[in-house]
Image (cartoon, rainbow over all chains, first blue to last red; front, side, top):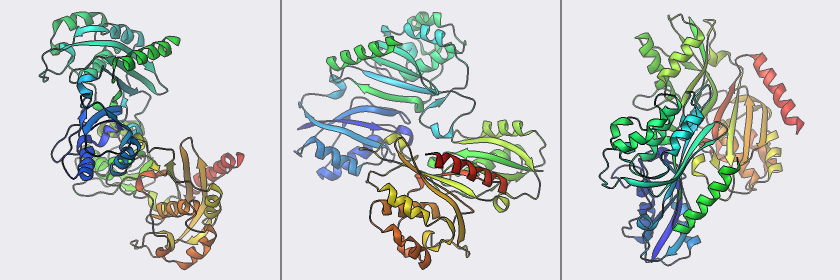
Length: 262
Length: 262
């Protein structure tokens, strides 16, 4: 049978999600617990990989197993074997033809920034310190250009091998926090490094280094050279994975209600 | 001339404070910046060492230098060279015969515990998860036995080579927080692992494993075997170093006012 698992992890001590020989990755840790339980190799399939240092507030993966126990027992067994920086929230059986990467309908990412006179050693690895003054309105104006369906070649790593770089962005919001602000972006899918490149670009627009009004031209150019920087991994959190269209619609409606109240 | 430096650090990615060849320690990082500035070896002298994983909200060290620049310039130069998990707060010149370890008048440590249904991956390395029910009154009652002057042989690591194990504890408080509680202890000095052993003992009293009323007997026994456990390093924060008698008195008065208000 196939099980779907909801997990969160603190990425700061992991070399990313994906399995690597001789590295501490989220996949290595989870598969090693599953291998011990099954006495054979079990592969897990995530909704998407996250890079070294990137966190997940909510990530999903599925795996196939001959062990038939209730979700709560799975959850307890997995959490007992896993290190403190990974937490399993839920395990449930799903259709054997459901594949979370192919069948999910998009994701939300959050990027956390803190400001202030001094950096804070206790935010290290969890938020990014950005001491520069930024013009909030300039950032919000630039961010609107990304909403809708666009070719994101200019805002993704040139290393990517995926050919189709068209993605749909549902929302891209700036949310003030006690110590700074978060960027929250929801889309049908994201290219390699895309959120971190978008954030780096928007911050530089906020600092006045680029004219945000030129954003459509940069999108049009389909060339990474216009956007040289990538924001650091440690500010990035995978926040939601939408397992189906309904979950996506509900969350978008919620976000609309919450954000437009202010 | 001699400079006194106030520093804080997140201990979670350090192998402790003290210099070690081929390890990432706080002293290695700071001395390597000073060595670059001086083009010669400069040694720093802390108020006290902290173990691997232990944090400092406030730590002091001093060093001697022929470089004569104002404190603010020192602060800027050091912070520019240091990694994000160390922050210099203040640098100032002091008498060349002041030695922070010998002349300071005590320290405050804080130990942070969080409770709840699930562990939190984002507290990993910063607080200790203690899901067990504890009796607050039993803990507070046991903690009172440690106040005053005692031989702490039973509550310190047998590995320590210091012969005189008598220390004076000024206060030992339990403070409720949003997610759990903190232990806050102020004393003239602390033996190796002493705070972590006291915390482990008090938690077990709270759980009902030991009768806290037997604390005076255990102190009297002067034998570590009665208190087998040591609480994990990651919950421990060096919170204050009292540079002189006046600073100690003022803080004790403040604590009295704050804590006895409730």
